[in-house]
Image 1 (cartoon, rainbow, N blue to C red):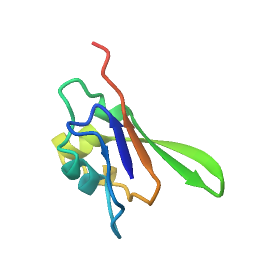
Image 2 (tube, rainbow, N blue to C red):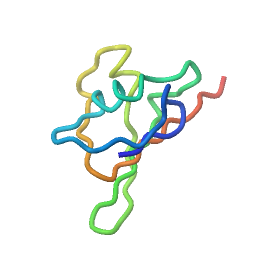
Image 3 (tube, rainbow, N blue to C red):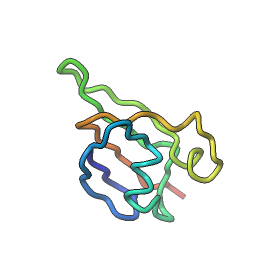
Image 4 (cartoon, rainbow, N blue to C red):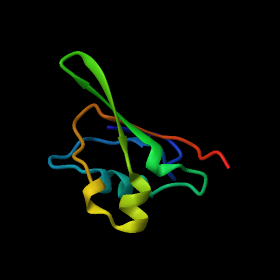
Length: 85
């Protein structure tokens, strides 16, 4: 599983069974002050097709919205963009 962009510590992490977005964000130390976490993209390969989903990291971390806590699968790439002020 890879986390790139505006994570405090972007990195590749080994997948763990039942891994969630919250687990992933804890492992990378959260978001930078410049992150636009609610516009993050989860890129996933499903049956040889690249699918992309918007995930709401800020809602999950700052607001405690557990409906934003999605499952992570092996090979997922989380892309966290920079906010435009």
